[in-house]
Amino acid sequence: MDTSTAAHTLTIRVYYEDTDAGGIVYYANYMKYFERARTEWLRNLGLGQRQLAHKQKILFVVKKCQVDYVKPARLDDLIHIHSHITHIGAASIVFTQQAQDQEQMLCQSQTVVACVDSETMRPTKLDPMIRAILEKVKV
Amino acid sequence: MDTSTAAHTLTIRVYYEDTDAGGIVYYANYMKYFERARTEWLRNLGLGQRQLAHKQKILFVVKKCQVDYVKPARLDDLIHIHSHITHIGAASIVFTQQAQDQEQMLCQSQTVVACVDSETMRPTKLDPMIRAILEKVKV
Amino acid sequence: MDTSTAAHTLTIRVYYEDTDAGGIVYYANYMKYFERARTEWLRNLGLGQRQLAHKQKILFVVKKCQVDYVKPARLDDLIHIHSHITHIGAASIVFTQQAQDQEQMLCQSQTVVACVDSETMRPTKLDPMIRAILEKVKV
Amino acid sequence: MDTSTAAHTLTIRVYYEDTDAGGIVYYANYMKYFERARTEWLRNLGLGQRQLAHKQKILFVVKKCQVDYVKPARLDDLIHIHSHITHIGAASIVFTQQAQDQEQMLCQSQTVVACVDSETMRPTKLDPMIRAILEKVKV
Image (tube, rainbow over all chains, first blue to last red; front, side, top):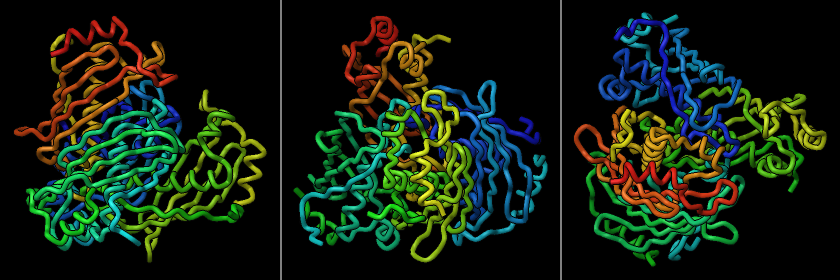
């Protein structure tokens, strides 16, 4: 597996749990999709979050997110989540992500993820090893 | 507040987040409603779960649940959750609960909640003080 | 009930369903809280969404949202959601909302809600009656 | 793809969205996992639910479910959902499902799914074509 490419794609199926009475995917559930994609990418890069929490006592927590909704998705749709890392700060990472169906953009987001101490929940500088891994895949 | 009555009612509003593309409340979400009701009742009885987790190192976890769905609820409905404690075991509590709208039964459930050690997740006997509180409201 | 004030507050309890293994409220769940608050406010103003969907064939859907997370909330916390309408467009409404605990800001958001035709999901101009109601409470 | 076998397995990853402040998968979320598995199996059998809703005006809705929780799952775990159809009634299907990690049973469930008219939500007999497909995979 080549994990050094500057993009990651995760494909997700829309189930009943994801939809609402408007017949479309509930707006907050895209945040779940985007987080699944970030998680899988980090795991592919060797950065499993449970392990980081236990061994290094750090958590990645969302500090800011922004989503633009373009087209609604529906039950049974397949959604492709494309992720990029567009900025790496001292204690944070910026992910830019798009959700697309076969043809069109569904929504796009920008998420600032902070690295925090799992006990105090205070920001903590990205470990040099983690930073090196992330820099390799940054756009 | 008289907390010694053998029943508790919590009223819940149905929001978009609770519904699915079938236009009705998603079946798993009643488990959330039933748990909110159990939590509020336990809190009223002085058994706040965060406090129990921190001070007594115990968690209440669901060991078994059963739900019969009678009539679907829809967006904007008000649902009344009626709860009873129908059995208290050495390390467990059985809750019998009904969800109703203005006129009719929506669903009913029976839930076995075990008392576990928050570190090991193993069953631990109900503390006599907790047991005494629960016995007072048992049907 | 005076429904003409330019603010609305909804108080929400944090349940297990809202939290995650980091011990805090899962970031996407604030979008549920913010939506509950918008929904209750609109209902207070006579704009029940199920009724609007059935009678006027319109839905309010989120076109854009942005959330800044300041401080995490935890199990059993009471969260106050303060909502304001800060802009009314031809076919959209902008809500500015804050989530606070007893002492501090937890997070704040800005949400653009579009009025769409419930069949085509295309933007549709705000009905003059709806607009008049909203203008009264706009900041 | 041989779709005539009397079992179906779906593998699911546990994300933050699935867990709660107890550090384990929230009990109601297994219902989501079980439903994803039923949905994928039905889809494999040619019974896509969105299509059934649109073309045949039928929905599969849960009438009864029962879950026994044996061992908790945690963040990042891979969970295998094994599904069997153990009974087919005039207007209902019984699924028996197990969730397992690498080594152990996590929980098991029995779910009665009813076939209902999507407008009236009333039970409707299983179409002979659907019944024939399901009988082939019944245990």
